[in-house]
Image (cartoon, rainbow, N blue to C red):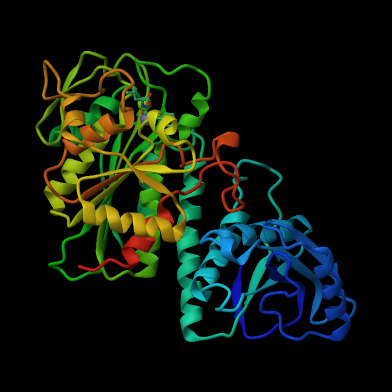
Length: 492
Ligand code: BES
Ligand code: MG
Ligand code: ZN
């Protein structure tokens, strides 16, 4: 797909404009020929402009547009930071369905909605909604139509469109790797993806393999990875574009390429979905790709512990006591609580080696998170009020919703072990998301840190996931846009 910006409408197969509820105008539509205007006005009378309503009308003279598409966006007071993203995605999917090669969208005027925001929503909505996971189908989706944006062209707008494209491509990259089946995506595959984006975008990339992990004391990663013939990897990407003495931001992502539960085997139902247990790691990959393409003037390190959690003769077991990278010992009581073990190693490594300013981690960590918050809001847990506030601000801007859960000392106490420093599960099912976060908190000292539990939001989970055009069935890339917003506004 190609995106262009034009000052006025050139010849186009279909000209698309937004309509507020019960309005008799197409937002931003300048005079077109009178015959076409007549049929547009006629359709506006029939149309209610309800959110998501789409009407296509032929244009009699076929110039400059062969057809006109009217897209309802509801009442002005109900416009959100997601409306244009969602509706634009619907427009794009409709255009693909009717097999047009290109389309033009008129940007609404600033007094109706802030243009910079509507433009980025439109670019993201169109790009993300046209992505389809069809790598393994012989019959591929037809080619995505090209978008032309109608808005008075300026340097600022052009630059903004470019940024939005890179952000959307980051999220799509994350989706496309997350959707890969577990037989086609092992820790080694992820390491290869990291290498290839590092080569293209001049990042440093280091892969630590099994023997070295053992030697260096990554007891969590090697224990969880022991049961699979697909060996564990620790993937590290460095984007160094800030000044030398600037402390980096460390991003950590759980990448369990398949989570069977290990010896504490999961029940069979929906186990296939555990291919998405790598989504924390793929989120970090997508963010790193975009950061490097945006050439953000900061230092960022992406750390991705990747394993496959399998039962087998070599697997770790309930009852084992292992030593984590930071020297603390952990009693294993359930091999299905594996994410926190590999993350603890990666977090401790990140803090020790990079003395970061901030650590952010992503993980499909707990089923309990889905019970607590459902499939439309991620949980965040943090040790730093200021950092958390900034994350919440970015979340509001990108509409990737989060809610904070409290990490009080009482919950830290719930993972103390009788026989080791910590144990890898809390007490029964109580506050499972918080006790998991408590385990992670134990891995680091006092670096400002925020943890995202994305178990409910990393992929669409049937009707419980609110339908959004730009998140078709499968992985969503949750967090990529949010963190890119945070990093674009990062001040040292
Ligand atoms: N990857 C799962 C969490 C998960 C489950 C995410 C379902 C999304 C959907 C994680 O490794 C896990 O198995 N957690 C256990 C922890 C428990 C044993 C303390 C869980 O949530 O059941
Ligand atoms: Mg598990
Ligand atoms: Zn898991």
